[in-house]
Length: 327
Image (cartoon, rainbow, N blue to C red; front, side, top):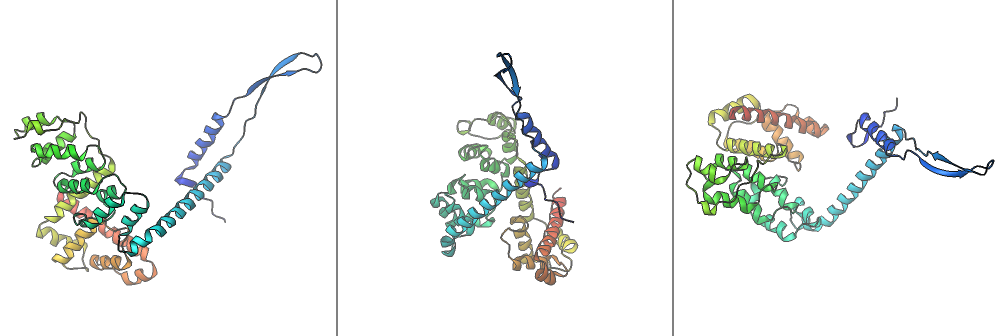
């Protein structure tokens, strides 16, 4: 039996049905014209209808064609960008950085970031690094955000997403809020800086204080995820020895032993969103070995994607362990 063609753009049959209805509803109801009568010589008014009846299958076929062309155009564009980026990659520049340049991002900003060292604690697809590679922030602004990102992750994400300016954030911190993360969160929730400072009996410089935001910043889902991840990273950097011992005993049984090197590997996979999009087969195998995943050699040879899924599954278990310890 032939397989049915999947719906384009992850649409349901109901979605396609709605499009058909919208097309029908958008068609003219009819056009009234005057015609002569060949019998009496008079004129009469008639209404012409020229409705076009589209069937769901026809709309689906059209959308499939559009989706196919869109993917082909995207693939051609990606190939072209890769070819243009190749000289920079061969010269030693990271792929994400080279692609940013050929996409038109200011090469000075991209190279400033590449030549600096502060960003190397993050993967290239970290939200802060991406903000520079997409031309949203300068390297200087990103470096400034990074300086307070650890203690003030919500404020950093508000800057990254341009809910507040970097200048506003630094003014707030410099006026006396730097040592008060909870107070900063109150400001992001819409509180006026001078009122929050007075209630909390903080020593601040009122003249240097920026104006309040006037309303609460509603964090996007991705913002919350990044804030959660920053909190997890900070927790792991100071995780107690007994927690590490429990983690290795329950989730890495048959894998690596509890030592500084392996702890750093666990932290690294956290920073790489568990499995980096650039992870090599060798890296995936090493993580599988650390996690004690059985049959890893055969999976690496026969089905590397399956091995990657096993590693990701184990990493998710470890993340749950860390979150439980945090709570």
